[in-house]
Structures are given as C-alpha cells and as structure tokens.
Length: 352
Image (tube, rainbow, N blue to C red; front, top):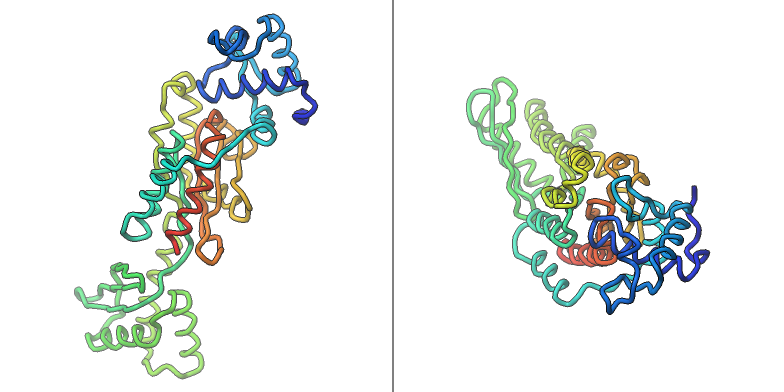
C-alpha cells in the first residue's frame, strides 16, 4: 500500500508521527502513547493530549501503513514506508558543525598515499554514523613511469612496476624457455622508454599497434615477454576489491542484541562486496545523496538495513567513486545525510 503524501496528514497526525519516528531513531525502541503524552517541560514528548487520544491517532497512522506495533511492545515504530515519508517530506537537515567538518577534513587531509585517505574515509563514515562506512575505490589504473624485469631463477623473473604516483608493485612473471638476461633488459628499456606515461590498458594497445604495423624492433621472444609483463597487472587490477568497508563491529550495539538474526544477515550481506559495490554504483549519477531503505533494495531486504550513499568527484567534476554508510533503518538520517555529503566533497578535494 502506497503511503499518503505528508500534506494529507492532519497537523496532529504529523506531529505525533514525527515524534514517533524521531523517538525511534534516537532510542531504537518502539515509542508508546504514555511517552508521547504531556508537555515537554514535564518530561513528555511534547503532545498535550491524553494517552487515549494519542492511541487513536497512532491507530490511524498504523492503518495507513506508516507505523507498526511489534508483538512484544505496546509502542509503535515506523515502517519502511513511514521512514521513506519522513525522510522525503519531514526530515530537517543542517550543515555539519564546524567541529565535525574540521575533524573530517583533518582525517582525510593527513599526508600519505590515496589508499590511506580512502581507508580514513571509510573509518570516519563509521565514526559519524555509529554503523559501517563504505568507500568504492576509484577505478583508475596507475600510469607507468618505469618497469624493470629481473631474473629470479630459471623460468621466473620479478617484474617491478613503478607508477607516476610513486607507487611500486612487484609480480612474479613466468619466463619463456631460454630467456636471456639481455632480453630482460631490452624489454625493461622498451617498456620504460616507449610506453611510459600510459596506463596498462593504453600501453597494451600501443604495443599491439606497433607489432601489427611492423614498427616494433623487438624479436618474437621479447614481444611475448612484454605482453606477459603488462598482462600480469591488467589481470590483477580486474580482481582487486573495489570496496573498503570499516566499522562492522559497530552494528552490534545494545539494540542489535534484540534482533541478532537481522544483524547477522546484514554482516553476511556485507561479505558480498561485489553486490554491495553494485548497489553503491546506483548513486554514481545522483546529484545529491541517495537513501535506500530496507526492502527498497533487494540486497538488504532480509536484514532490513538502510544505505546512505553519495558520489565523490575529482577537481574537474568527474565522478570517480561512491562512499556511504550502511546500518539499521534507525540511522540518524538528519545528521548522517549531510555528513556523508560533506565527506564526499572533502574526499573529492583530496583526490585532486
């Protein structure tokens, strides 16, 4: 059943609905009519109505599919439809505080390789939300600065790739029979001199074009060795995880102990990083932060979880990845949504 537009609710119903949702998001437990009754200055929820009148409105909201009453509690909690109505039509968000902004920028601005900044981003998102933080790693290949192939023993060599960003990676390479040390040196010089400044994919295409046109001065054995040296990184890059997840332990809070099966299901879902990455990828083209609530996404339908995700861009405005938070549907959306957006902008500045 589709939920009604928020403007179709009476003022009384909107006020009670808001207090139930905000109370549930704050405490993680259903909110009862006695909690909602009474003026604020007497410790109540701020609705100056009798519990009986409030119960009547709660029943109406439940009939509309916006609230639900768990069997073990006399209180109400928002349904997924209720949360969607609240997030889209009632939630009030504000920019992060100066203190929070400074903390995020400090964590992301620490010197080091970009991988460290991505790790820091995932951790800071977890700290912000009290749930799990996720960052999709940019799908960008390093550009070659230098490549050396050094013999290890008969039939094997160590290929050392140096990227323009200063990164260094080593891979063991199987050698064709009879490969000489001079051939290894020739291949290393060829790749460095002719293919430097290109990505691995660009280098492979350029080499194939040279060979096909007959412009390559390499013999057949050396050409084979160049192909092996480039392919070992191309294959490895395709297998690299594209998702960094931090803070899974935060999902096991006190409220989660009452619903441990749901949390276990969520943690199992997070192990399927490819599926999570595909979900986050849906936010790549979004102009603003996207929110997926519970069964709105097939992946987290069983665990009843929410995802808040935003793309991050480089200085030229190109989307290079997506970051986000995943946790129970009772996330503090009003606080986490602007934090995720600000973190995405801060990481974009760090990416350059």
